[in-house]
Amino acid sequence: MGVHYGRQSRRASWKCGCALMAGALMAPALAHHSGAMFDDKVSVTLNGTVRQFQWTNPHCWIQVVVPDKSGPVEWSVEMGSPSQLFHGGWNPKTVRVGDAIVVVVHPMRDGTKGGLFVSATRGDGTPFGAVAR
Image 1 (cartoon, rainbow, N blue to C red):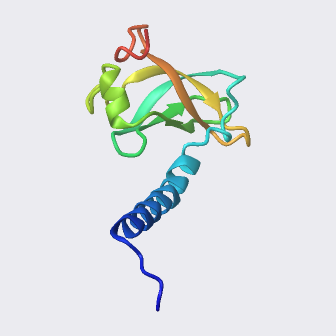
Image 2 (cartoon, rainbow, N blue to C red):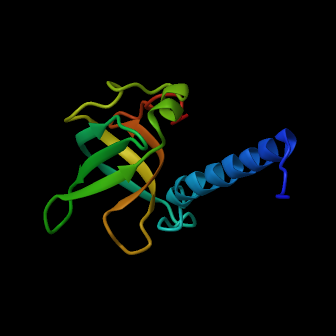
Image 3 (cartoon, helix red, strand yellow):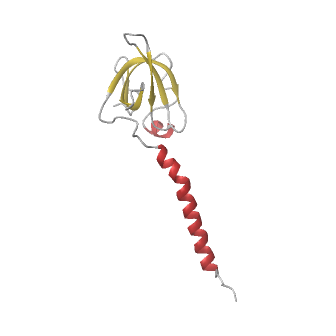
């Protein structure tokens, strides 16, 4: 006589397997959203010109060219997802190439010219979207 598995036992095994698979698939997504590379205790204000605005998943980006005594420096500013920004009053045309912009970021810990978006205003002080109130 062999071991007989009932319908409930097979169903429980299937559910357990699905739960394990879902957990395994979620781990990389959770790891992706670490903010460890940004120094959230420091804020840097960038006063420059928009070179590019990328409305893409999983994160939107603003490339900002900032004047420097040694010449222009390009900063990469990481933002939230398009859906997060949309709920904050942004859209793909909120920021345009050539716009004067003042962006506050939490800078990269390693000194790379990049940071995590905190807020932004136009050169005249008008906020971008509802996020920058």
